[in-house]
Image (tube, one colour):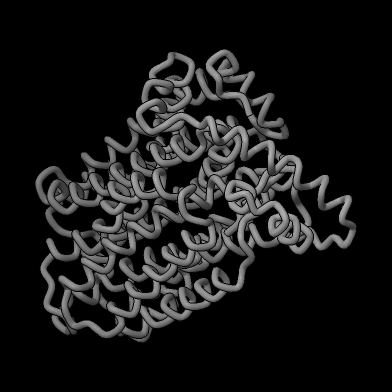
Length: 466
């Protein structure tokens, strides 16, 4: 993984594309693995003894890795070379999946996903910083959409393999992909930015020539100038404590609050889909054949909807996608809450009502993928300040995983007490709050340069210019 500026393109754009796909695909495999094995581990034929509490930790523990990964990533991403950093993270991937493949202990699986969460969060931060710097305004939509698309493919592959009803087979494929990602990392050339920062300008020039597929030394020397300029700017980058003081400046605080709210609402909506899907699997589709059929249809439609999003992100404004997505999702979640309430009053699951809920969840999934899922990733690439991108991305990653961990854990404990109807009403309120924030505070970023976006956010006076 090589961090570059917008002036360097060519083959490096393709390399950025491949890196993003590999990282997000492996993450999708993790989501698919935990979803596909939940019913297996809770069944009477489970190969591993596991309680519902064990399953809740298995699903959510990877999110706790962010607590450590944010500090590790921020403090060491520039002290080690980009290549070494990525190799280290992918080694974690391989070790985690290999351990899951050969273990028969739920405690080992939970610990492996904790390590996996640390590596995944670090790569998530670096990947967003990396893509945001590489991609120009013309191809942001494609790379941002591909990032989500690869995750959906990873989930789908695991769901398709769930027919084997064997958690070891499900762990084999992501382990092989992790090894492939490790090989890519080993074979990659070092970042010209890191080499310049170490005073190795000649080697940086050679790497630029290779990455840009240029034989002309004069062109390569011209490409090296923005690299040197960027490295010199980074020498004056604020420290971790200084960044906190910078965040408290009103204009900067507004930016991070907007991003945290929009990011949090999107995650809440995504997890409302996941929790409802889990409810249906545990209560209405207990038969393994019905469960596998449901998750395969569900994940297949997710990929189809993701392909449709390539059109919407090109045609519509970012803010329009968020507004339509949040408000429509809120109304559908309210209908789901009513359906859940009827089931809870009845005391037993109702087959026809379960089918209605399943259709509604697919509809929410359609809106989620078609509108704000991809728009959110692109917004992160566009709106994050260039000079403080690592710090802001770390905050987003940390808050995202805190949201996810809290919701997943609370669902297992609160759902039996409060019921799905109450939780769905909470999701509904959150969706409408998100729509309100977008309407009043989020500027449209479609087709604008990063400098124009900075001006729209009134952040210029606070030192956030690119």
